[in-house]
Image 1 (spheres, rainbow, N blue to C red):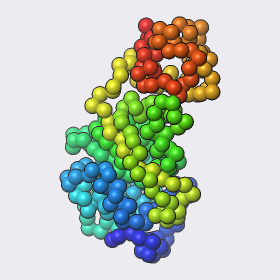
Image 2: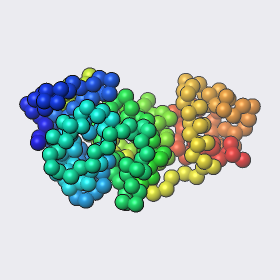
Image 3: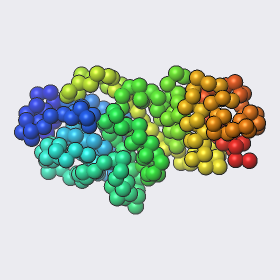
Image 4: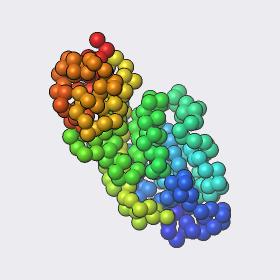
Length: 276
C-alpha cells in the first residue's frame, strides 16, 4: 500500500497512533522519495537489507519492491501492526528491539553474507547507531541513511571544514562517506523543523591507516576535538601529559595546529608516536 499524505492519516487512525516526538517519529509520506533512497543505495534483488526504524513502512515497501530481503528493526511496538498492514503479504522479518542494544549478529546473520543498511534514522540517535554499526558489525558493507542535514554533513566532512569533527575522523577510519542528496521537510508527516540529508557510507575493505589500536586513535581524536578551540599542545595535554610536545613533534605535527586541521593520516601518525 503506497503511503501518501492522503493515506497516512487514516492508517494512523485505524491503529490509534500518533507520531512520537520522543522517538523522533517523522513518517515518510512520499513514495518517490522512498524509491529515490533505494535507488541511491543501489539495492539489488536478493540483497540482505536491515532497515532501522521502519515506522509505518514507507521505505520498507520501496525496498521490498526492489527485491530486497528486508529485516525491519523497530523500537516502538505500537507501530508494528500498522507496519504489518502496509507491507501486507510481502515477506519481511520484523524485529521489535532497540538498535543501540540489540544483538546485531542475531538480527543480521554474518553467515548470510554482506548486509546493507537503508534507514530513515531518528535524528536523536542517528550518530550513535551509525557508530555502533561501524564498530560492531563488519558484515555491514554499506549504509544509506537519512539524517538531519547538519549531522550528515558532519559525517562526511573533511579536514579544515567547519563541520569536521571526531565523528568525521572515526567514520573516515572505517568507511567513505558522502552526502548524496537532500530531502525537504515537506515529505514527512509530521514535517520536521529541519532539512534531511542522504548519506552513503561504504566500508573500506581494511582501514586506510595503520594504528596501534583503533581505541587509541579514537581516544586521541576525542581529546583533540574535546577542546577544539585550543591548540593541540593544550588540547592533548590531559591525554599525553608532559610528553605532549615531544609526541606531536615525533608525529610531524605542529603543536599550534588545531584538531580540525588534522587529516586521518596525521591522527594515525600521532597514535603511532604515542605508542612508541
